[in-house]
Length: 306
Length: 306
Image 1 (tube, helix red, strand yellow):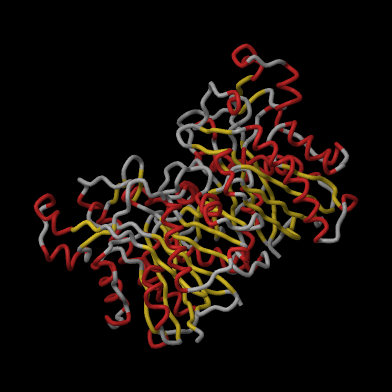
Image 2 (cartoon, rainbow over the protein chains, first blue to last red):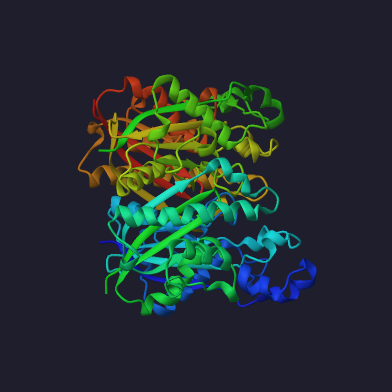
């Protein structure tokens, strides 16, 4: 059965401090630490593109897991900031990694909900086509589209990328997925020239939608909070993660918040934590749940087998 | 079993004549009719976006087939010219069509190979997630990115969009798919500011790769040309379609060329012909094969059941 063999994440070393922005935006330590929860943001070099971040993530993967490039049959990149609109970034990554010509490659355009969707996508596509080894990348460098004078977005997002190795000897398998879309509200989070976010609207949508979505997925699978070891929520901000957790009535230690030192990395936010925690996770069921651009949301139950 | 219930295509009414370009580009009727094979190109209004073309295609679908919007569980748009880079165009289409909030929606970034990939994608994603009704859109309006003074691209491409209804009462089912990528050659067909195409390199790649790819897929499925009723090739130009056909040693009437009056519509080129021909197609096996941006290629064997 196909599943996640391992996950690796890359964060650029360069950090920008939100403490240096206190005067500019009229914010205080409490706002930085408890509201958004982002102290420092990872920032790539301006010449570093989405595909470069993917390659860096792959190098991290290779440090911890041997990967035979000639065995890769599928390469998917989740991004809304591709190197160019055409070709797809997955083709550029394919070239840079020297993947086989028989490898399928395409991008999926999704934002914060992208990893959960992408996981369903690569597992289904590979299973359907009899493929045994694949790479799922997330890479969405928002520093390219953020207006540094926009308080709603300039303090939140960090650059980074992840890669998930899919194969037949998995640590994690997927039990069930659920998806949702409210396209009528897409103007709440959109990039025409720069990124625009109506923070209040996105917060309100997420705080209402995410807990219900997770509860419904658990109920559909006859599971309760007692069956769930941890909840990996999209790391939108400390306040949204805390709010969802409280509405779910779940213990704090079951809901990691990890982005204080690098920021919200969009579709990379969940796999970035998985990359850290996967080696020491106990057997059990885990929730992934993500929400954002679209508006779009997706949740999954995944199971650690060994 | 999931498959294609119906296909509909939309072409803007406005046409630009390549005969009016003879002096500008130093070309003659033979070049227009026999080399590129495009006499007129469909051209959308500049204010019409990818999502608008999708909605127009959906209106065509509704003219021929009743669709219960509340039943749609999946909405995928194949495009490399989204309305905005974020959100995904599928979310905007979702909003404009008033699709259910439980509907999954995402874009796939692929060019000319996009329909064949997209078909594998929506079938696998829906099957994996137990979905019964979905919409696969193709919409890639190249008029937005073409330099009207570039002879290599200005005469070839037309605007258009298609939608394929996927469901459990199909006319066509998929027997097998095969994919390929050569990311190292991506610079042959790229859009940095405007579309750039190294026509010779793309032609040479396609003329070499496509016939081999189709033959290998037939062999893998123990089929020969005798088992194939028609070959729906990506309509890159008359010359490339003719070249592939000759290299396959296939009768001319089995390989439609249809774009003389509207141009190469990228990922819409195959479903645009399917939309025309599907109602009268006899039972049997059909080849779909497409190639282009990436470089990327994909072939499929599909079967008309009734």
